Length: 304
Image (cartoon, helix red, strand yellow):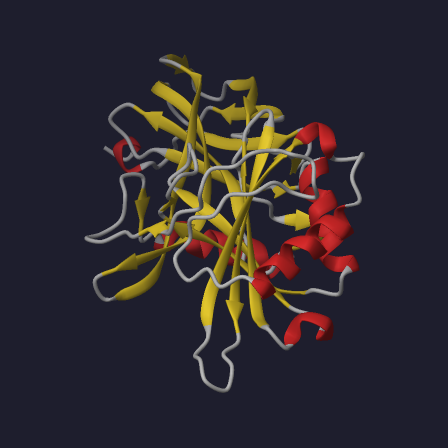
């Protein structure tokens, strides 16, 4: 009976080879199990990536925490009393995994971890949570460097639940990296939101500009979307390209997204940008108001 309540059950400790990761790259480690005071039947051992996402519902926006990637480490197995078991794993992060760290600096607003679940038959499941730092890919890093070189000041980053129309997404959310503009652009722009939607070959760069209003007109949003190959990371003057994107936004009124263009004269074609698909009526499967995970995230962040 005590075993059913988790008393004297096994313990789990997941050890990552490194907490540093990149989209599309493997994350490796071991799930270490130690048997408790009695033998147990383990139904499965799995890993999941968990993070926080902002969701728009009927009563406004609220935060949700949940899984967006799931992998099985082991199927049914028996763990004897006091037995020690170490199971190696390798999971490949989705290409669209959001960035949480740039040049060793944590992006304010971003939290991500690997959650281990050990499902114990007829007993309380065991779990472990390890924070990871997701670094940008070279092409993403070059574009982020360009924004910094042009004087944009990082404000905040978060994940928005929903989809960008016209952009193929494999995850149910997208990241927004928000900047304040430097003086040279501040006369026409309040803020810029940068989104990367990445696949093995290219990165879709989606920009949303909060434009200032004039004496006889109100402010409005302007959008741009650019398809950038990974191979162009080290062959392009990205400061010049990003400057062109921003100046284009300053000179074009684009209240309803839907334009397509190349970047920097390289001749890459693009589809139109669509408005972000709205979310109503609750949270998607896999996301929940995860107070327990939130508390663990907060505990880790407090230690940091």
